[in-house]
Amino acid sequence: MLFSPLRTTIVCGCRSASKGLIHSSRSPQLRQWLVKQGRSTMTAVASSANAIPNAATNRIVGRWLLGCSGLVVGAIVLGGVTRLTESGLSMVDWHLVREMKPPQSQAEWEAEFSKYQQFPEFKIMNHEMTLPEFKFIFYMEWGHRMWGRLVGLAYIVPTIYFWRKGYFTRSIKGKVLGLCGFVFFQGLLGWYMVKSGLEEKPESYDIPRVSQYRLSAHLGSALLLYCASLWIGLTLLLPTNKLAETKHLMQLRRFAKGTTGLVFLTALSGAFVAGLDAGLVYNSFPKMGERWIPDDLLAFSPTLKNIFENPTTVQFDHRIMGISSLAAITGLYLFSRRMLLPRRAKIALSLLAAMAYGQVALGISTLLLYVPTSLAATHQTGSVALLSLAIWVLAELRKMPK
Image (cartoon, rainbow, N blue to C red):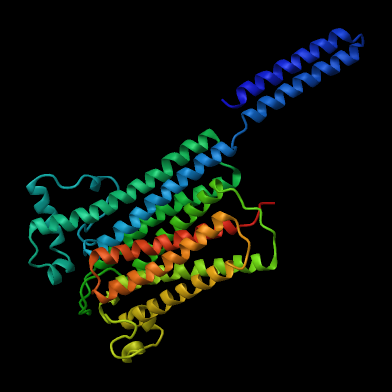
């Protein structure tokens, strides 16, 4: 629409100029040359006006990816609440379409409840559970699964539409296909995780729970999907800052990348804390009980097993990583103050530093109050917010495209 008046003006001008020069010129060769030039000009104007992809389509794609990343955040938060309310094992089978409709009649609910009663969680933990109580945990897991399907549709349907319209550049096509493939992988990984909590384990005296390895893989893949969507969306929407490639800027950029990686690993370590209920073993801070380093830190053998399976070690590691992330972000902020940066970059760095201190305060409060559901869910949401701000900082500091 914006190009239409411009195109009409240029085309009419070219025609008028060509006619005037043709009538005023007596040379047939000159007339032929002028007509050819006029036609080529009109073709160039028309093609530039209709070129796709362009800045407008990039904005559309960028906003779509930001919307998708927001839906992924919703899935992460809802998954965390499902885990905290111990609802994740209430649906004991998986069907892509059939389970979209929850039980309706009393008979259907009783049939679903009887299936749940055949698995370890009911037999060991919830053998006194009533049907209304089962309905609550069922709807929590059902809501999480339906949200996952919504995420899948939000990626796949617009991808098909934008692809047919020609909105994607060659590089964006590969990235979007990767994102859609990752959505499918995430859904399969979710069921693979749930299956680990439904298996009978006669040799184990522990309460039924999903594997902390599969839980961390499920969360980690969701975080990767979120980070990739957010990064691509921001790079399409935010203009690249014209920054002089000084030594200090390159150091700041490397510092920011390392800090973002540390924030990601800290969030991922939280999956091991959740999977092992490690937030309930030492509810004191800064010491763990009466000691800085607890006696049972390396109680398992071999030693490497403690890092992933000993609740004490898992909580200790999460504390160290959280404090390290705070120190790194503080250092990044102070280092950036020595440089002349654009306003948006300064805002992103300031918000990142403020969020880091808020996130540590949330983590300590969650620990001291014995992991209340609302506070623990807020702490998990805070980890995603912190990671989001770190990615925003990277987007503001990125290099100019060549």
